[in-house]
Structures are given as structure tokens and as C-alpha cells.
Length: 269
Image (cartoon, rainbow, N blue to C red; front, side, top):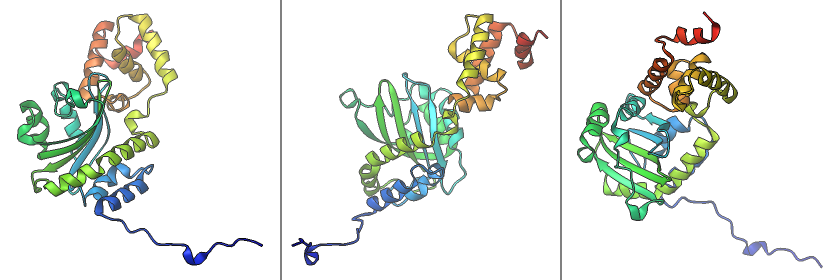
């Protein structure tokens, strides 16, 4: 005799999301691994975090500053300009994302308004780009801060208590989704130049001047590979002014002034 399941006792039903936060996370999960994650994030997140721009980056003494993703929604996108302004100095003294000692290593939420931001940081980044308020989810490890920042701009109403509560509900999952997206679809500035060629030119440059620093070697090696300074900035996750600084220091050590002279060092011209 074969046992048959009692189908009359089986229960089936369709899922009904319990709140808006669940629906938002479901839509974001469907975006992970897709190229449009970066540009579509704000639109999908708007029901719970109505921000006009966002950025995802790492910074801190334990790493080179690196912008992974950023975009704006409903306004002209100035997020890359904001990042470059941040790298002109404010990033060196930024403590707005640093966790208190007792919370280091934990996921941290942060809410700050423009008047609370240090003067230089506020002037160069917030006031220059019309940003009034920020909410962040932050993960700090080994002197490196990984942050997801959402910005309210001056044309928008302040974040409400309810919206801050919604952000708190989705923030841990959002952190995991963003990190998985970076792993699956590395941004352009993480798609490095061929390492063998970099190593080749770095070795030849070192033979000319052993005193060149690793960053000076990295910049000059890429110049010799035909990369533009903008491309080098993206490749190394640096600002364009920082790339120019390393280039100028290297050229000074090598006794040259122009890029064609750098090539001439290896052609005998």
C-alpha cells in the first residue's frame, strides 16, 4: 500500500510583502550583478530614502581613497566632482564616519546636516554642490572605512524621523548588496591595467632611479603604457590632481619635464 500525501492539509499562498522596506530590498536584490545597479539604485530606494545623490567609497589611513559607485536622481550628476573636491583635503581629516572606540568593527549608521560638517569639508563639498544633509551606513575595519552615503540636497525637505527609521531597517542589507555588486561588477577604477606590463615598466623605471616611490612608479608605468592621466586616475582610484602630483615628483627625480622626455629615456632619442 502506497502512502499518499493528504493534499487537503497542504497550505499554499502567495507572498505579500509586509512593508515598503521589504519591497524595496526585493527590487534591489534583482539588480545585483546588473550594470544598471549604480544608476538605478536611487530610484529603487526612493520610497524609503528619498535622496537626490549617493556615493559608495572607501577611505582611511589603511587604504587609498576609492570611489566605487555614485549617481544622482532628478538633478544634474555632480557626484564625481564632489569626490574630487573631497580628495583635495577634506578626506584627510574627515571624522564624520569614524566610529567611537566602543563601536569600532561594527556596522554604524550616521546622520549629519551640513552645518555640522567641518568648515573646509562643508565649503568644498556640501555648499559647493548644494547638499544639505547625509545619512550613511558605515563599516570600519583595519583603518579602512567603507561607506554608503545618501545626500539630501537643498531643494528637498529634510529627512523625517520615519525615513531615518526606514533607512535603519534597510541599511545592513543594503551594505551587503552594495559589496556584492562591487564584487560582481567591478567599477572601471578597479579594472586594473595589465599587471605584467605595469611590473615591466616599473622595473625599468627603478633601474633608472631607485628612489622612485611606489605611487610614482605606478603613474609613470601607466604613462609609458599610453594611458591618459584621467585613465590613470580611474585605474588607481585617485583624483586627477593627485596623479599630476605623483607625475611631477617622478619627473623631477628623473630630471625631465614632459611626457615625451619620459619615452625618450627608453628610446635613446
